[in-house]
Image 1 (cartoon, rainbow, N blue to C red):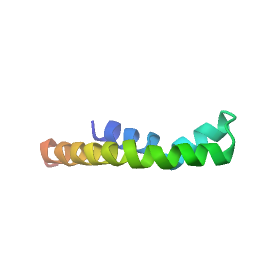
Image 2 (image 1 turned 30 degrees about the vertical axis):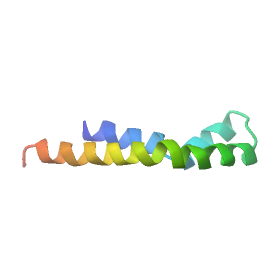
Image 3 (image 1 turned 180 degrees about the horizontal axis):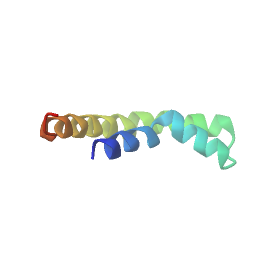
Image 4 (image 1 turned 30 degrees about the horizontal axis):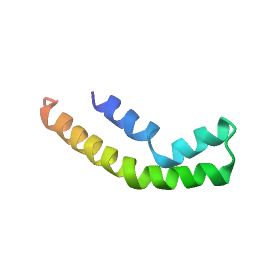
Length: 64
């Protein structure tokens, strides 16, 4: 579960999203503009929730 949370956090990272948009053919300027707003309005919340999820997974995971 921890790996899933970290993968979500990586794939929705604004820089990762920017690179995928440019890969899909969107120009760099438009992609950068979209990702700025995405980071402010969406990713800040998503990062917080995934961070909490990672901490919960670490607490639940039995000590090895």
